[in-house]
Image (cartoon, rainbow, N blue to C red; front, side, top):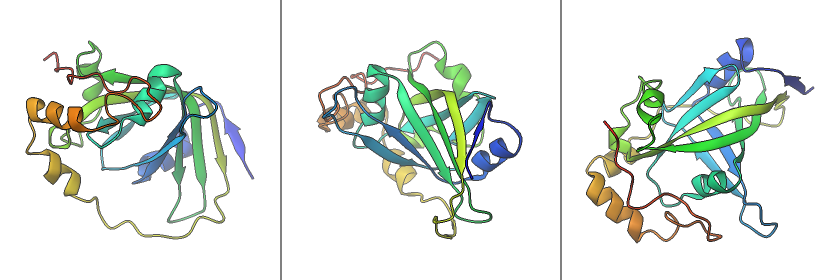
Length: 195
């Protein structure tokens, strides 16, 4: 049934890169803290950087739980399910880091995402994950579902924002600068890009 892999390559990499949707799971160190599970999509916003490293673009939203948890402890699990074709589930358990817009590595990392224009989405950070355990499992109970297309609502909503208005939006939100459990979230004011 399940198998553990030493790296993300070959058939495994092909499967991961073909999925239009994946999920991230993080949690604070506190035993009574809030576990966070988030869906991620948008074509071109995820890349495999090498055999043990993946990255995805973190866009504007109403929370920053993943960022807060990664800043506190770095633990993250990514999961992909096959909703079409042969049943399969792949999980990457690892350590993640939010790379913010003022980080010297940001622009070099952003160059790995040529298939998406991040500006209309209110790009906040790039999440880089180093795999520690890579596993797959059967996925026999995952239903067949069809992928039609990406929604354009996110880009339409945030395309009208510049850095100043985006920062004002984030500062109004209760769980952007601080997580639901009171952990530091997205640095505010929003870090400016260093280009």
